[in-house]
Length: 210
Image (cartoon, rainbow, N blue to C red; front, side, top):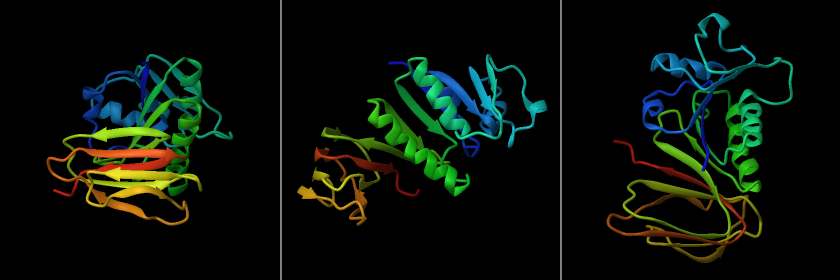
């Protein structure tokens, strides 16, 4: 599976993921600063240079300069380009926390954009301690996890079963206007199971504060 790592303008507090992750690296405008910090260069820089000074750019393998007067955000433009190039898995850093709220909401919407196209997307918060992703109809298991899990219905007909968590559900019909699934918890030594019978859910998975 071709994986792309996109780094947005909300500079991550810890950029060491650039050394841990494997895939095709993309800097979106000021996201390039994370690469400068780690003394690395991205495979691709997509920018309209409204938050990144052009003189800061050294030697990305490819640069696409955008007109600042456009419909798509830099991240969305990069995402559509990568889909055209055959990428199937997307990890987003520097796209939540520290950014303007409308950009954060836009980046969360991109998870639905990918989900509808059968692609996988994960958004990481600015401290890399929480991740957001969408799950559709199916069953998933989480083993050895420590921390919390929040689940938000994305459709009116979403039905959900939860097992092995602090708060369990049995084929529960969820209302997308009611935040019922906030701050559930993994249980030590127990396997957690999520079953989406119908619809889809937004998952927020994170570690407890240390």
